[in-house]
Length: 216
Image (tube, rainbow, N blue to C red; front, side):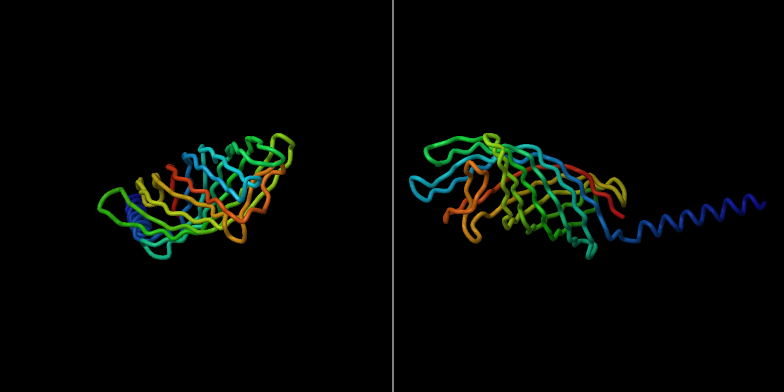
């Protein structure tokens, strides 16, 4: 009799805890993404003796973000993204030269996300991002390196595929831009990346990614 009573009480307690877990909203979410971003060309021409043009090659990009749910359908996310790639560039410095730079493109972005609740496992969302893009550049011809930090922005859209109240798969498309026009332009040279030209070029990359979201 005591055993039956204990089993009954345990069953009721588990049901209450389960109901509370389902109704209590999770305030934080960790988002992890990996995908592909496409090529983007860039150039800057000041005169016949001061110019560059090249390509930021596409490739693998990964990222992680911590999101706080302000409301049930509104989230604020701090996100880090990284891409390691190549940048073949033609530039003028004592004659026309070509260098295939090694680039690490880092983004630190704050985004506002809007979710759209549906009567299905899918939860579509859209967001606007703003922050900084940090470009680390190595010149394999002479071993020199440099970096630049620029204002960056982006937009994204996708959907969470909910497996449970705590776990979901993510599918996302995004457009990211590192603006190189604030306070003067930048140019590629034998030393890596230097400030100088008054003209500018904006990096614009489109990509797709997938990943997971874990709520807690």
